[in-house]
Length: 318
Image (cartoon, rainbow, N blue to C red):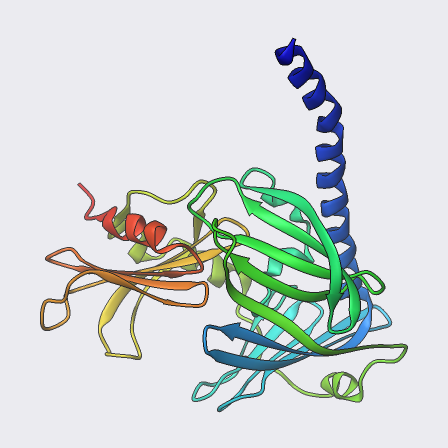
């Protein structure tokens, strides 16, 4: 009798779970649409442990043209400008450069402003509770990893504007590792003057798409075998270059599951044998593995155990 009762209870609850998942996805899709079509001026901070990075984020739709500006306000600063499908990066001590893409690579995962259906195989979407963030009513949406190899990601979405108010990387114990919190947001009828001024600026010409595609199949891709990656990850780019930090030649691989990016660096051992180990800052893990004849460094917003498994799986091709 208890078995029958359990089955009936599950059958009654199952549609609710499905409805919650659909509603969570709808909220995320509404957020993506709002980000692409609303005029807003927002300030937010990214909190990683005891460190805090302040940003200003502006967006507008001027006719059929989409304008976006993201700037890091501390230190030497960082400025990223997007006009439709061209993004230009102004970084300290580097020449500005442009790439052909429809989204900025910033503190918020790009996929959240696109079609999140691509994450279905690796993540679940769950409705959380309601609350107030920055004095505004908000709905929590949880993006939950289907395995222990990745972190979860929680978002609080403005009930009125559908814009993001807060987000956090959360481990499987429910601890918030890194948070993004809006401190101010204003939604306006007209674009900010700073965004309209961008239309009169000249920017570097983006690299041709065939050049970028060639980077994926660079010589580095055949130098090493990455024996294990979490489900869903695929190679975005590989190359061989010198690191600015120590001028050492390294083979570089960039992987993504559509939500999280992981970088793998392989190089000759540095002077002085050091034990393998991990360092963390917020959700970002840096794991360095000494494999004897070569060193492997894995960097990404992933658990230390995942980074360790990736690093230890690297081997020379047979």
